[in-house]
Amino acid sequence: MPLPQPEDLTSLVLRVDFDDDTAWEALRTAVEALDGGPHATWVSDPRYEGVGIPELMREDNAADEDEQLTSLFLADAHAMAGAEHSLLALDLYDEPGRTFRVPARWFPDISANLSIANMDFEDFADCADASGTFRGFGDGGG
Image (tube, rainbow, N blue to C red; front, side, top):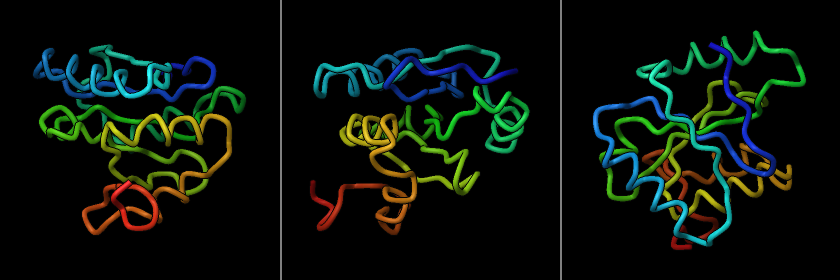
């Protein structure tokens, strides 16, 4: 199950929860409505239903070096159910397996900065709040 490659200057958002198609569309709409630019490569493939972090890490490690990802975002049950549509960000490069939550409103900024290597995964993960959710830099209010 090789991981899909994101389109240029976007981040991979991999759907792993397939319980609610309406929630999936709401999550996509929430992200895409923010600034009009494409920031995500959306993958909704039932082969990935319920896949966990260890499996994703194994798949990425098994890929050729030039096809390995540095990070990806999971649309899991939490992201589907929550009003903030908080995707689970997964580091696959510097600290493989490290995660934090990304509410939809922050996804375009994070995706853009990671896609062009302007910032590293840890820059965002280190600023996550006590719940493990990134809510901006500084005061967290954005």
